Image 1 (tube, helix red, strand yellow):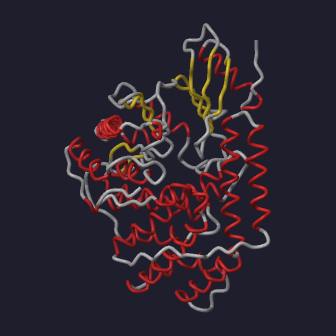
Image 2 (cartoon, rainbow, N blue to C red; image 1 turned 45 degrees about the vertical axis):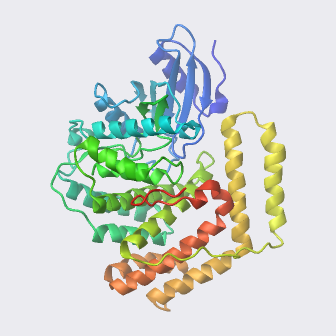
Image 3 (cartoon, one colour; image 1 turned 180 degrees about the horizontal axis):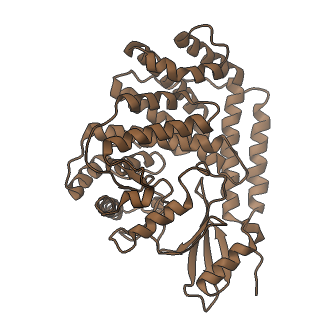
Amino acid sequence: MSRDFSASGLSPELFAWIAAQLGAEVAACERISGGASRLSCSLDLDPPARVREAFLRVDSGSGPLAGTIFTLQREVAVMSALAGSQVRVPRIFGFNAPHSAVLMEKVKGTANFFSVTDAGQAAALQDDLLRQLALLHQVPVDTRAVFGDAAPDTVRETLREDVRFWGELYRQHVAHPEPVLTYALDWLHRAALGGDRPPVLIHGDIGPGNFLFEGTTVTALIDWELTHAGHPLEDLACIIARTLGVPFGDLRRHIGTYGELSGRAVDPAELDYCVVLVLTRWCIAMSMGLAKTSVTLEVAILVKFLQVNLFALVKIMARLSGARLPAPPEGVVTPSAMTSLYDHTAAVLDAQIKPAVTEPYLKSRIDGLNGLLSYLRNVADYGSDRLREEELAALRSVLGNHVASTQEGRVALPSALRDATAAQRATILQWLLERSALQHVLMKPMLGPMYERELDYHTGTRQ
């Protein structure tokens, strides 16, 4: 008997394809919250299906990287190439190109690292994840067969092409450039790494939330959306960067452990470069998503993760250049006549609407909306016109008084950076630090525990 899964947003034809692949109809379909990109569903199957449970991943076309080379088919190609290796990935049951959906094994375990409260278990899991990454980077995969004949032969050329590629995506898809990303792309170009060794297979987004575990064992690496060929330290940089969202132990120990497992000591300068690259890449992807918002997109998740990553990015570049970090601005938000209206809207969502909603996915969306409201309230209280005027004044101090608007200044910033002296770049960086610090304060209620997190992987992570 066919069930009604219209609330899932998936078509009956897709459910019919799943039934054909697995030999029985879907009995239950639960959307999984948390991802800001692709739709994920946990499936239960009727007997006599070949499996009782499965996992469905669908590209709705509204995700940050929809329409780029980072397709669901690319994920499937990499996971299929890893089948039979020591790298633990879900088994693929089928790929449906017309619906851009992949049906795969539902691997035992959870992705919720917050659930781990025992220090011994946490350390064992962290080591097992690093072991999986070392194995991944040693898999003899023909990267040109997976990613195309144009894939570069060396790490040096791969990184240069990656910076060029992400810069082009940024220029094509983000109409309102973010000055921190403009500066970061210029920094990555200037600080380009050398190296003639071949690139390795990279997950591209690994860390807490993107692996499943049971006990002290990693059961699968998941969410391969950003997989590519690259520098092996990129995945270590991902683990470091993702601790902005979920603390993940002693980063110094992880760096040493990965070096031992990979058989190659971690070069601090190369790791710094990879951390800047990873944060820049993620921020560009999130900016692309926010440039084409839709009701299916997890906008609240993108907004807060974009801020914590941008702030971490500019502070790392400041540390590497010896720039002074500004103190957090205090007393910048004064309640206005609009404050009570924002607070009333948030209270209605939380006290009346949320209790009436039964689906966990939709409850999480309500929490996200409340977070957005708290940020918008603070922006309104600070003054959106004031924010624009302050940015325009800063851009004019760098580019000249002929700049008529913040948009004009942001568009002109890349060429100004290319021709800037070291002193001029230092002035721009100091402004970006102060601007990012203010945004962090305005978003403080929305960020929650993430507000205090820092990336300091040379001396440990302050949580």
